[in-house]
Image (cartoon, rainbow, N blue to C red; front, side):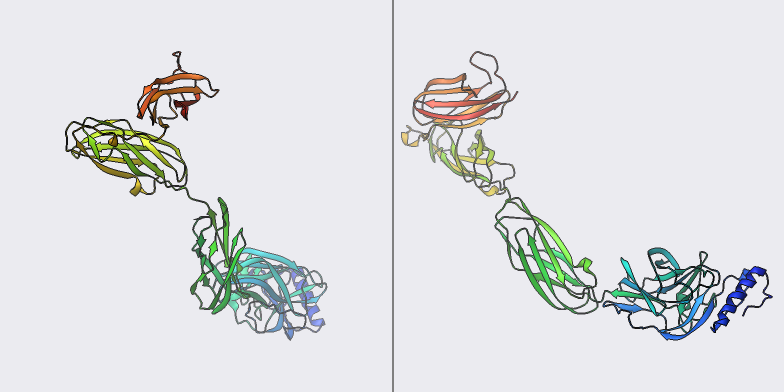
Length: 544
């Protein structure tokens, strides 16, 4: 018991302490206290509670995890600091990664009404409570353990300390709230008693036992998850088949058997893969049944893979998703199929119109240049360029070039090469075709003169144009040829050709002017080629 002669204690303080301890004695409680001067700071008062058990009926046992505790299992002492508002706390060190689920604590009410208490979780800060990460209020149950749910998601890595405690106000009148403790101080450095912003250990303040505060955690002992998704590129082709593949990992401490589910939507694809005896820290590959992409073009799909383990302690790493997009790629591929003129034998001094057939092997309509070059293996003797406009996928087109006059030297071999120039062409192997011709001297026979097979407006280059454009055309029969330009309303704008013409490939130029002289306005125009009852029409665009 405190002596009345304690140094520097005020008369009123001595009376208050004497009255409080006298009340304890009157009710037959065993209490001990050490009297300190005001300079010495607060001192814990202990009340013997007889070592009552801590597992009363009615306290639920959670279905998860493990208990971290440092008490000996009996409620032996009730502790308080006379006249002080106090935080009582214990420091916990998890054996492995965990999630905090509940806090258990023992609190005794000596007299009066049970107060409202505040439960608090702190991060550790150098061996004492630091940042508060959770708090909630509760009314203590004095019959045994108080079980308080931790409603926030609080996780701690292995060996990362944290604190759990509660706040008790100083007793008012005859109300006295006691912090529960066991029979001896075995973990002094884990105790924390906070008074006026200062933290003390149990031995600092003369306490008689370790605080009965427990952490109920869920260890990540069972934890599997999806690490990566492979086998599905960022873009897929409609009606093509792919094999979805994923890698899963065992993050836990036990070998695991579990299912892995794969879903791809829209479309309703689903499959599962059975994983057997996956060791801790091990990975395994999961190969699912093939997925055939629906025929719809320009469609997004999502593949999600999830591990299905009933006892999984961490659901956050179970599911992984990957997006892909179905699209038919545009393939650009144009090539030269054949060269039909000049023939393999040419006559010196004769005119020949080189002709080639080109083909669109790609998946979109194409605009591209076609170049014809003739050389004598000692130098280039002829070059011309034509343009193919809007050649449909799978389409062929005959391309004609301006006439070439064979030089007078006989016995000279000539090589005719024709090639396409298409931006983005994926297959250069079919772009170029060459053939040989030999020059001889004599009378040219009709056999060697290539006649066009149809009336055709080959190419208009350039198109659109701003100053002038060249119109290439061929005619299959002799006759009076008309090449005329009409506007969009069908009115005649310009007659470019009106003359008797022999069969073959020809060209003419339109300078963007009308028959009356002045230049015409911007817009869409039509070029009409006619020989007798044969006609061919092409569109031109003038942009100034």
